[in-house]
Amino acid sequence: MRTSIIEINGAKHILCFNLWALEECLERFGSLSAMADAMTKGTAKENMANALWVLETLQKGGKLYSDEMGMDNAEPVSAEKMRIVCGADFFVDLKSKIMSAVNSGMSTNVKSEDSKNVETTQAE
Image (cartoon, rainbow, N blue to C red):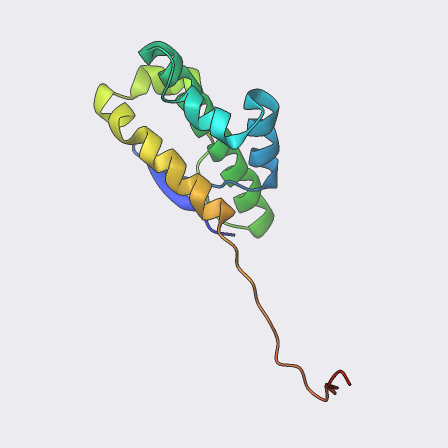
């Protein structure tokens, strides 16, 4: 699973766009393109609220993943708390950090093993 890291209020948080996070986002927005639109095409206040919700969800996905994998990870910061502890400069880069995590989660990792004693036949 590919993850990314974001620092909030001095603590590093794993962001993970796993199936759990995908399901949460689809439940709220209906599609990934609608999610992207919700962070860019509304009022500034709506864009920020949606971006913070997505970021909180990615943190929760990261926490679920890190707990399952036995990794250290800070507790997720709620959207409400981020509104209090983060400055405007945090929001400027927020959408790119979110999309980086989403894109990492959607990248495919395919592992294959060399086949031994596999017979191949040609079609006649």
